[in-house]
Amino acid sequence: MQVYYNLSDFPKLTFPVVTSGTFDGVHLGHQTILARLKELSLKFQGQSVVITFHPHPRMVLQPDNHELEFLNTLPEKIARIEQLGVDHLLIIPFDKTFAELSSEDFIRKILVETVHTRKLVIGYDHHFGKNRGGSFEHLLKYGPQYGFDVEEIPAQDIDQVAVSSTKIREALKKGDIQTANRFLGYPYPFSGKVIKGRQLGRKIEFPTANLEIIPDRKLIPANGVYAVNVIVDNAIFNGMMNIGFRPTVTEEKVRTIEVHLFEFDSDLYDKEIKVRMITRIRDEARFNGIDELRERLKIDKLEAIKNLSV
View 1 (cartoon, rainbow, N blue to C red):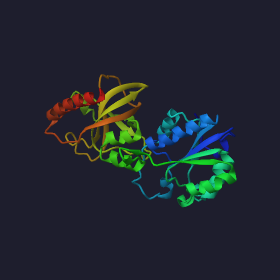
View 2: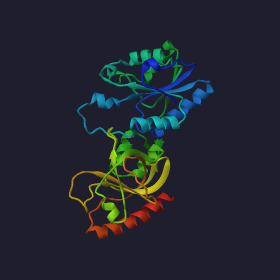
View 3: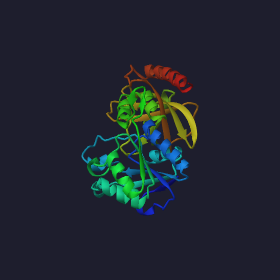
View 4: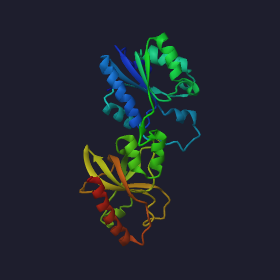
């Protein structure tokens, strides 16, 4: 997949089949759109093109909203879109000037003059341009004028619940990893750099890697203990992870993320590791001392192994 960060870098293609959107999470609804994109590009011997934006438009339009959190970092989004077989990804820098672009100017300057769109595929209730003024009806109106066809994908449901990035965020904030993963179509990921901690885990036979999450408004799920896969230097290990305040061993009010890898005994300091969240085992809890915590961790490990072997 070719990735472009500037409009001027985008090449002239023979038959661009295009979609656009923020694609936060690249969830099952998005995947339906991208599958159709690929299908049409193959049918017309063209090229599949995804247009997205960075930073997320809400960060520019709501600069004082410090509670904004997203499902993907930019590298995660790029990796997911590439895995789905897209040919070209155009990442438009989103700023206040771009936010003022009207829906008609977006069609003319981006879809037509930059990408030379021949076919456009959009999701249900898609809006674009200043104040989200553009709609499917606008595209139907201007498509014939500018020489492209438009196709709208209807609302996609799973178990009668519409898939949306908002619903996935809500599930993660509750610690409902299984629902989030079902809507995403893959295990919820995040990455972090391993930093030195208090090394208490080694004293209770459960050494942990303390993660420093790269700041990018990445949503960290609810506090608790989780069964996870961990990728270290392209190798995959099973493990369990705690998100929270470690109430048994510290009075600090700093939220930490600690990962214990099974069958692993190498130095991880300063390495960046990737975590795939599989299921939630329990809430974070305060125990009556280190011995009780150690026994509970043994139970957690057995539960994690059982869930990871499914």
